[in-house]
Structure formats: structure tokens, C-alpha cells
Image (cartoon, rainbow, N blue to C red):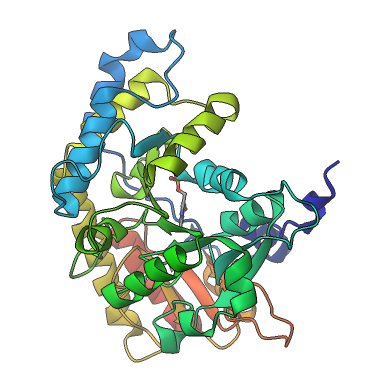
Length: 396
Ligand SMILES: Cc1ncc(COP(=O)(O)O)c(C=O)c1O
């Protein structure tokens, strides 16, 4: 067995089951689980129709890089969403479709980590803490040191880039940065993104932007890294961004997303995926093309999440450090002790949430930046969210 497997931190969802399964709710009311970032509304009819229209294609091996129609729809969406000039992103060199971004985020760390010289200093990968758990596993299995950077409230929940040491920067191969952030739902501003980009180019590492929540926002569309690249001259070097249909189109089960960016990296990724990646079936490529071409269903998803945030605000404003998450669909609230609050919510209100501690690592001083928080996914219909939030405030 690969001994690095023993270094992986357990999945937050397994840890949650271990915490809550031995405890029974002391109430007969129906349990509601607000733990996973999975939209609970149906994907648009459009997806089902296009899948059906193309179902004669399931017998064919699909191409590793998707279809021209899919990549073209993706480029058109990027151009609309981030107001990019024609030609800045090219469908045949800058885009790699992937079967969900989770596996691709993991695989990219394998592409980027140089293990050719065992005598060289160990490469490292920067990860915000708390984080999406795949980043950590990706770094470990690529043979890199995961360097956890605290993302505290004072910094809008983004790591302080001014405190990175020269040692870390010189060993750094990649920086996973998520905006809108999971779990906190904050958005990296232009100045922050420019600083991250400049660092990546100065120290020759890859800035990996995880932008899978970029279409879910409260007031203003989050700035995407491609907009920054446009204003900095248009080159895509040292940067890749990930986008997904899982949240945008409530289509987590379709397993469809893409990476866009530096052609050296998108081509290297495609090369590795030709050996080790599962290509998306042709009907999925067709559905993906149709979904990226349609913005209407996305606007209605956004309205739904706004309504849920309004409900959360009504119940939580002025308590638990509540703020309206500017992006994404999670609440990140300060309950003092996240594990205790999670147990209480389960036993007294039959509500399952995720303790922040399960999404973050304790540092050498014993500090864990997630410990005082819980994450709440606002993914159900407003009636269910109303019920869940009123039960929660009654027991917290
Ligand atoms: C921050 C973040 N990145 C990536 C993903 C993966 O999404 P998918 O594999 O469905 O594209 C998720 C899913 O929850 C996520 O929260």
C-alpha cells in the first residue's frame, strides 16, 4: 500500500456520521440534513431532454476532450459571464472538459508536482484553512507538503498573502484558491486576485482558482480570475480556473465541469486524463453544451438562494456573527463550539449541520480556525429552510 494513504484526513462526512450516528434526536420531528453542498431542486428539464435526444450515443467511447459543441458553448459562456474579448480563450487549447471538478482538482496536483529529483526540497501546495477537503488529499497523494494558510474573518476569510515565507514560496508548485469560498461564502476582490496572480508568476507556481460557486451570488457577480487576466494583458500563463454545472445548474449527478487556463497545463492535464481520466459520455457532453448556453435557469436558481438567505437573515441577524454570504449557498456561523452546537442541533432539533472543525486543520499551536463555526447548506426549498432555521434558533 502507498503509505501516504495514512496521511489523508478523514472525509468530513464520515467524521460527521461518527459524531452523530450514536446520538438519537430526542424528538419525533422529521430530520433535515443541511450538511452537503448539493442543490435539492431538480436540474432543468432542458438537461433531461437533451440527454434523451442523445441516448443513442451511449454505445460510443467518448473523446477525452469533450466535443467541439461543448467547448464552444463553454467559451461563449465564459465570454458572456466575464466579458472577455473574442479569442482570449480558445476552445481547442485552453479548455479541458472534466467529469466533475472534484476528480480533476485532485488530478491536477499530480500534473503539477515535480518529483524527479529525490534530493530536492519537497514541493509544497498552498491551501486555505478551512478548505474543500479534496485539496489536501491532492497535495498529499502528489507527494507535496500541504501548507495550510489560515483564512480568518479579519481577512474576509482569505489567507494573508503578505505573510508567506520565502522558503514556502520557493517550494510552492500550486495554490488552491476558492472564490466564492467554501465554506464561508466570501468573494476575493480584484486587489487580492491580482496579488495572488503576481505571486504565482514571480515564484512560478500555478494559481488554481476553484470558481464552482461563481454563478451563485447575492448582489454582484463575483470577479473571476479570467477578468483579472484580461485586465493584466490577456495571457493565461500560470493560471487555471475550474467551473462546474453541479451548483450552477443543480446538476451534481451529471458530473460535468471544465478547467480553463494556461495551455501548457490544460494540455498536460488532457494527456494524463487520456490514461487515467474517465471521459464524459457523449449525451453528457451534449447536455453540458445546452446548459452552458442557457442562463435563464441559473437566474432562477440564484433567486431561490437569495430567498433562502433572506430567511436565514430574518432568523439569525445580529446573532452568531451572521452575515449575508455574498457568494455560494453556505452559512458559516460562529456558535462558539461547532462540535457541541452540531450535537445539540441534532439531538434537540433533528437538524444535521457540519462542524467547521471537520473542514479545517489544527495548527502546531493548537488553533483551529474552523472550531467555533458550523456550516449550514441553504439548499432546500424555502419552506424547508424556514422550518429548519426556526428549529435551529430555538435550540442554539
Ligand atoms: C469548493 C468546491 N470545489 C469543487 C467541488 C466539486 O464539485 P463537482 O465535482 O461536483 O464539480 C465542490 C463540491 O462540493 C466544492 O464545494
